Image (cartoon, rainbow, N blue to C red):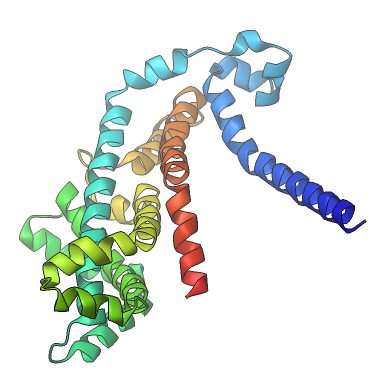
Length: 279
């Protein structure tokens, strides 16, 4: 009887999760189907009409999208902003997190408290002062300027996260490595990084998704030659109104990349969340 109850319970949970997954994927599927329809078909009915009229579907919109120099340039700008930002934040935060967790130096706790205090500073407060500073340095309106802003505001949380994760590692493990003659750099690269991979992967996913989907910072700091996809799509709406044949494939392209990244690193993300909950 208990086995039957457990089986029924598992079946109910699995059915519920399937329903949640389908609901979550419905907007993505609707956007994809809309991106395969012409503007005329879209004006006649919703995307669900493709199930009764599959002849509406074609890749003409994507062919036109690839010929749109503004969209393609914005896509590569998004890559050039998101990837370096994620790499820099993860590398610097891992080094700083290890230093705050396991290295003794004057003022360590005070500096870490300053880093934690920066978590409460809203991004909006720094927009205008940093924009003025970047203008004086010649970085305003450039991709490096957008990257530096994202790195600066992404580091406090990243350092806080990795420092707390690294600090939970067994002290005996690091002491044994030092007794075996391992340098701090060797301990960091050969021991701490492999053990901290789940937390690092989770941080990388969050940072990449945050920067890829950002529009506020890019809207202010990027000019027409360095604007990412989010700003370019918003510009297309303002210029051409309801040009769904351009916006739908562009929006799907902007959405599918984070989805692919998340599912590609899903295992590491779950490990990081579970490890943090156990610790």
